[in-house]
Image (cartoon, rainbow, N blue to C red):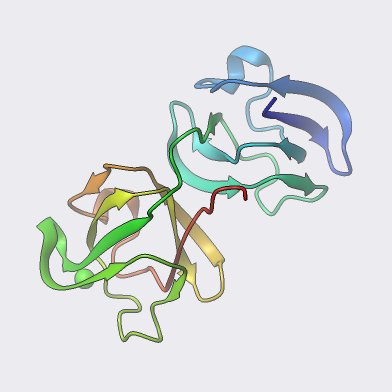
Length: 172
Ligand SMILES: [Ca+2]
């Protein structure tokens, strides 16, 4: 059974709660902007700075996270139950799917394909994708789901930022 266990202090200490379904408003559970460590069992989750799956975000795959860079920041939690097979994302140089484009089906450094700090819109044809501000899975993240179409990164404060992308992979 997939779940996330959250704690109000680093090192899995403090108050604790377990969730098996999306939590749109952590405040209602008494855990708004207090999560300091967490454990993920099974399916991956996305944690968001704002309620209702908005604002800055970070993906957590199965594992234990004793210390969080984003300690005390999260306001909502979303479990990823989407089909992770056949990942494919189309990135575009300009907003509204204009300009140069690339089609990606696997983890890619955008520096290697001369597309770093360029993307302004995208369409996800399959899988769940994580876009990163910096190379090698570093910096701010943007998580996008199957069928998502983002015509502009400006509202997301992610324009001409992405340097690295990867699909989440299904468990063997
Ligand atoms: Ca651009």
